[in-house]
Structures are given as C-alpha cells and as structure tokens.
Amino acid sequence: MTYQLIQIPQGGEAIRFAEGRLQVPDNPIIPYVEGDGTGRDIWRAAVRVFDAAVARAYGSRRKIFWMEVYAGEKSFRQFNTWLPDETLRAFEEFRVGIKGPLTTPIGGGIRSLNVALRKALDLYVCLRPVRYFKGVPSPVRQPELVDMVIFRENTEDIYTGIEFQHGTPEAERFKALLREHFPDQFAKIRFPETAGFSLKPISVQGTERLVRAAVRWALENRRRSVTLVHKGNIMKFTEGAFRDWGYALAKREFRHQIVTERESWILANREQNPDLSIEENARLIEPGYDMLPPEQQAKVRAEVEDTLATLWSTHGNGQWKRLLLVKDTIADVTFQHVLTRPRDFDVLATPNLNGDYLSDALAAQVGGIGIAPGANINFESGHAIFEATHGTAPKYADLDKVNPGSVILSGEMMLRFLGWHEAADLIIKGMEGAIAARTVTYDFARLMPDATEVRCSEFGDAIIRHMDD
Ligand SMILES: NC(=O)C1=CN([C@@H]2O[C@H](COP(=O)(O)OP(=O)(O)OC[C@H]3O[C@@H](n4cnc5c(N)ncnc54)[C@H](OP(=O)(O)O)[C@@H]3O)[C@@H](O)[C@H]2O)C=CC1
Ligand SMILES: O=C(O)CCC(=O)C(=O)O
Ligand SMILES: [Mg+2]
Image 1: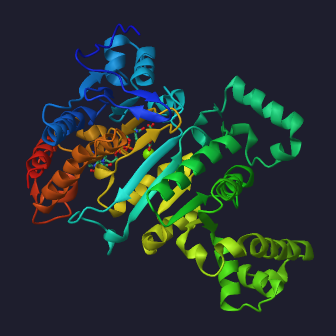
Image 2: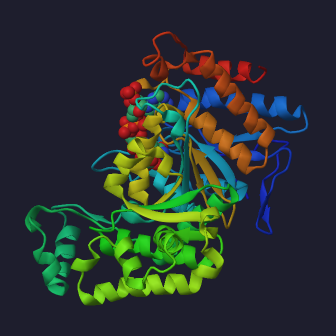
Image 3: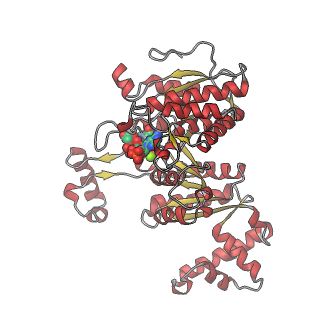
C-alpha cells in the first residue's frame, strides 16, 4: 500500500494475522498517534519506556519500528483533515497500534475521532483493566481489593452518533415521523417543541460478540465472575436486552464452564435441603414470589424445574462452585457496590456508555485516570489500538507535568497482546519500583505528602531505572 503523509520506517515489517493468530515479527512496524493536548508529553515519555523495556528484554534481537500516523489537531494543522484516510489504512494494514488522546468538542463541531477509529476498524471491545499498584494514593480504605476488568462494548449505543439537534430541519422531520407513526411514543416527550434527540441502538450481534469476548477472556484468565452491567429496568429493549442476550449467549456457548447467579442459588438451595419442593425453591430465589401474578409464579417455578432437570448432574452437588459465575447488576447501584464491595466484582461486561462512566470511576479507586490503561480490540481480525482511558487534559498540555502511566500501561498491554511478555513484565517492574521509591507525578504527589514530585518525562526515566532493580 502506498502512503503520501506517512513515512514507513525502513527495516520494519508488518504484523500479520493468520489462522486466528497474530504473526509478530521481531521488527514489527507499529503505527502511533501522538495525540492532542498532553498527548505530546506522555507519548514522548512512554515511547522511551517501551524501547527500553524491549531492549532490556531482548537485546538487539527485537525492536519496534514506530511509525507516526496522523489524527486530531496535528493532522488538521499539517494536512487540513482531522482523520486522514491513510491513518485508517495504516491501522488496518499494520494491525496493532497505539494512540494518545484526541480532543472532541462539546455540543457541536466534529464527532469523536476516537470513536471514529473504533468504528472504522470494528474494534468492538474496549478492554480496561483496573488494578492496584502498591503505594498508589487512593480515596478508599482497601484499594488492593480492586482487581476488575471492564469489557465495554465499543461500536454501538449512544456512541453511534445518530442525533437530531433541536431547531434543525432534520429534528423537525424526525419529530414528524414520530408524531405520524408512533403517536403514543411522541406523546411521552415532555417538551417536544424544544427537544433534541439521540438514538441508542444495541443489537444481538453487538451484545453477543462483546459478552463472548468477556466470558472467553475470563475463562482463559481464570477469573471468578463476569457481571453484566446494564440499566435494563429503564431501557428495557436496549440495556435490558443486553442482559438477556448476554445470559443466553453465556448459557448457549459456555454451558459446561459457567453457572449463572440464579442457577447457583437454585442448585445451592437443593444442596442445602434435598427435599425442597420446586415451589419452595422458587420462593427462595424470587423475593416477593407470593405477590407475583400466577403466570409469573409459574415462570419462576419453570425456571427452577428446568435448571434442576438440565444442570443437576453436571453442576449440582457443589460442582458449580468451580465454574465461572455469570451475573448481572443495574448500573446505578453498581457505582455504589464497586466502592463498598469490590470483592464482588471481577470482569464487567457492559454497553458503551456505562463502560465509559465506569472506567473513570473505577480508576479513581486505584490512583486515578493518570494510570488507567486500555485497549480497543477486534478479537476476530486481530486489529487493536491501545490507548489511555483519560483525555487530552488541555490545561496541562506541553507542561511536561501529567502522569504518563496510562499510556505506558496501555503499551504494556500491547506488548502482552504481541506475546512480548518479558518486556511487559519489565514495565510493570519499573512502574512498581518508581511508585515504591515515591518518585511520582503531580497527581499522586498531591495525595502523598512525603513523595518527590517529578515531571512526566522524569517519571518515565524513573520507570526505566527501576527496570534494573
Ligand atoms: N480516548 C480519548 O482520546 C479521550 C478523549 N477525551 C477528550 O479529552 C478532552 C478533555 O476531556 P476531560 O473530560 O477534561 O478529561 P481528561 O481525561 O482529559 O482530564 C480530566 C482530568 O483528569 C486528570 N487527568 C487526565 N489525564 C491525566 C494524566 N495523564 N495524569 C494525571 N491526571 C490526568 C486531570 O485531573 P486534575 O484536574 O485533577 O489534575 C484532568 O484535569 C475532551 O475533548 C474529551 O472529549 C476524553 C476521554 C478519552
Ligand atoms: O472520544 C472522546 O472524546 C471521549 C472518549 C472517552 O471518553 C473514552 O474513550 O473513554
Ligand atoms: Mg471516557
């Protein structure tokens, strides 16, 4: 493929994908976007850490050939386009890349370039691990209990970008369509004359591939549970459907490796009392059973009967305790429970917007978004773009101040994705060493009275130094 704006580095090779696996040469070309705002500072610090880790782990045998690709303000300044087609082609061709944050204006202007990249490459999983590094300041009492991994759906939901702005002819046509074809729905709009609209599509395919990836990852990594986080009580046909499709997929495709929470209750009830009737078991699993209408009660009884009939031999007598637990929780209370009972949460699978909110909130428990990494992945094609959870923090741009930890840990995830675990391990070691030595950036230093505040670049240096501890 030919490129006009992008310089392909001499001596590197593209990562390929064959038979469901990445084929990573020892000299991979990796496209990167520097990013807007603080992106410049954190990228400069991070790339030195990546190169140092690879050099220490593999000597001259392996080396990353970095290839700058353009997006955002730098691209607009240089090429008068926010997201050149070449950038998409390069991420497509070279398969695995990394990016800094990109600015998205509020209330108007261009739509998110971050979202555009995810959609263009169909990177349907936004994977954001949240773990604690010893010594990191935290507002909670036991941050070490936080070890959660968010699987955020990355291509649907409100991020689809189908919106109608109040006062535009498009909004008027959309309202006319509602008024004519869905008068009952139209009547629910409190202030139709001045309302804007955003649509929220969530599909079977989008949900299933996300939940499949989360369950598979949880099994491969011996995690305890996958929690489907949704607001299905209010958005019944999108978030509620996400829950139902998620459970159905887990039961259909992973039957012998998982147990749902309700199934575990039914089986445990029978184990505690082998003589328990179906009705008594139904009463135990369904609070308010006696208040339900008869057809609902019959449904709960059928669920108990079916679970015992189909699962007792494979999952009963405590066998279910060794399996992956699949459960669900409503989004609002989840924000309380991840704080008050972090032990109950492990892998979280959730639609796009919930995942966006949750990832920043969870990061706060373990040091903040300054060290919150992430990846956007398509597990079928092997395409992936690694990026920090945080944004461009424009007030700190070019001050060499902010924490480069998020993009560094995103690179650590990328190295693992490539199978370069030794280099990834060195980054973790360096990060642990730098934090233990209390040489930290402003965000940690303001919560650690006896720490030495260092610049963004110096924190990168400290990580490199502590790789040799
Ligand atoms: N994937 C992406 O590219 C993303 C892009 N964005 C975009 O970024 C822009 C700014 O968004 P905003 O909501 O202000 O969120 P930001 O994440 O950019 O910044 C919010 C606050 O988080 C803290 N923070 C952010 N980055 C760091 C860091 N590296 N080290 C330490 N602390 C950090 C700072 O807190 P404090 O003030 O307390 O020091 C900062 O003021 C918007 O245009 C938004 O759309 C947002 C999220 C993701
Ligand atoms: O695209 C943006 O500007 C925001 C994205 C975001 O908040 C995220 O990816 O978590
Ligand atoms: Mg976000």
